[in-house]
Length: 420
Ligand code: DSN
Image (tube, rainbow, N blue to C red; front, top):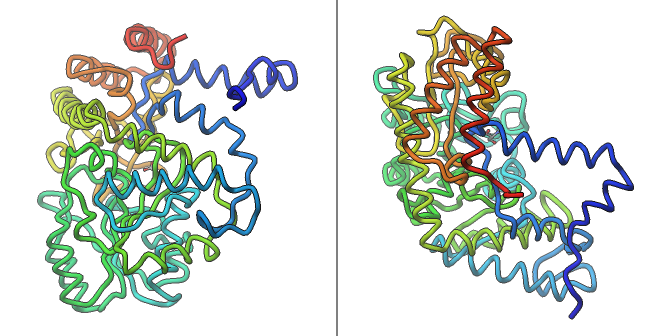
């Protein structure tokens, strides 16, 4: 067997110094700034090595043993290992590792279970859902009759009574649960009961929290759902990509919807990278990590409240918190920009019933997946809350922002990622 042929950075530097410089600067940015985007993480060197491998060259339309190209014997092994690991880790009857992304996985879900024009019930984007859950600018909202449910005004948690009433009223073909900006846990048992009562397919878009499920830190939707779609690069800490788990009875429909229904050749370096990440997720270290992600997020939300801001729904039970920053007199957009100038990467986010436009918003979303991977704990979460509060207050002033950035860099220097 030959030795591994992996990323050759010096070759890139001599052939394309401009792009080589982007890679170096991005590495510095990830190392030095505070990474609080709730959907990002630092994937392992093993996953990165797999992504940067010659598997990227291989066309493999089809599935292991049933490909439309020759020479798939090695990549077949990687995909079979990945499928077996996914089934084992999540206790799933079927797994498809080929979707290029979470949104592509969701295209496949619609295709497997519905026809254009069908009614689907899903969480409104404005209250925490996702573009593919029926936004008018997305295929889902253009091609399907998506009815939206939301959260209650009093506790900012899913209004299950409304969801149930809408299900009986509209008789949807499919009900989607899962969100991108919802800090609370979801009652999958209740949603299964509602699906059964109206004969709907239960689809869970678990992109945000699947890593917490993999780490056994929260309840799994897999025993309840007909199908669970997700991304593999958030708390799960794998390569950028998507995945679908399902009951065995839906296996053929899901596989056909992914290929040839939704995409051609899978990205085999990413499929193998997913297999590597799934092995990492099956360790006790990863389970500790998943629990710490939630502990850290609880601490971060509480510390931001101590700084005078409000955590939506009173805090968090997951890896993300949604913070209403109206008390500071600064909009979500300004808060995001001021944090960015101060070396803190997060995103503006609508809060439930937000009086501001989606491009402005009244909130910010923070997540602890990446900072926990870097090794930070509760003491650092308090420090991060203070840095965010300073940035929101003073970050419009260049000198003050520069001082906050210095403090951010002193903190991140103690928790180096991708050590030199
Ligand atoms: N855009 C992702 C997020 O940041 O939550 C979801 O797809």
